Image 1: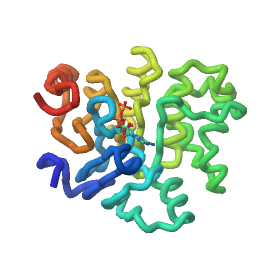
Image 2 (image 1 turned 90 degrees about the vertical axis):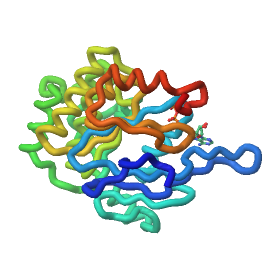
Image 3 (image 1 turned 135 degrees about the vertical axis):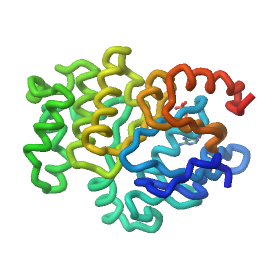
Image 4 (image 1 turned 30 degrees about the vertical axis):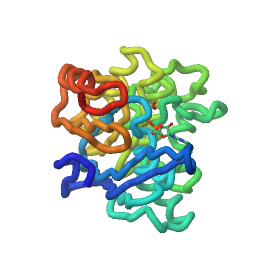
Length: 255
Ligand SMILES: Nc1ncnc2c1ncn2[C@@H]1O[C@H](COP(=O)(O)OP(=O)(O)OP(=O)(O)O)[C@@H](O)[C@H]1O
């Protein structure tokens, strides 16, 4: 087992065992994930950190069933992802997984409201109005619902993306550098909102971040290097995470 002791727990909403991802062949072969065992806790906020190229995005994409691992297993909310047929995979992604991208990924021709309800509209699921109201009030979007993405600031667009992820009450939300394109004030708003959705609504969240301050909002920080989990921290503070990151040398290993 290559993960650090303690990165697996019993009350997990998402788990990986022996996760490997190899890109390319022969001399161009890259082991982006090199045997990851990890559990993401239910109703917990987890941050994944690590140097550039350490495999953070690959791990997120494999966990969120957006990419297929070369080896190993991923279980989301009790469902083994490997071997699911297209229809079942689409249903898993739609019903149990939310994803927030660094670049917002909103549909430019739709209003904020339409973007938020789009996954449910496509699935033919009825929008739970009470929950919709709770979500948009929490992210402070009520007076922006009829605006198109290009009429919104970056922070507002990311709030729409977070509301879209939350609206279907997924088992877990993965967010890949959700504040990477935002200034510090908008970042704090988004992270505060993600934190509240864990504390108030019992949402489970995993984010990838380069930023120790962002990791400080999480319950747990995991550190990746060279495609494996090399360390973890419970109740991380920005200072403690910064100190830990200074312990990586140029290729990411603990110095
Ligand atoms: N589609 C791909 N084809 C080939 N190699 C890839 C591909 N995607 C990622 N890689 C390689 O896999 C490794 C891990 O990449 P990944 O994007 O997961 O790292 P990361 O930690 O998210 O990096 P960053 O912080 O820079 O976003 C890197 O060496 C990268 O070059």
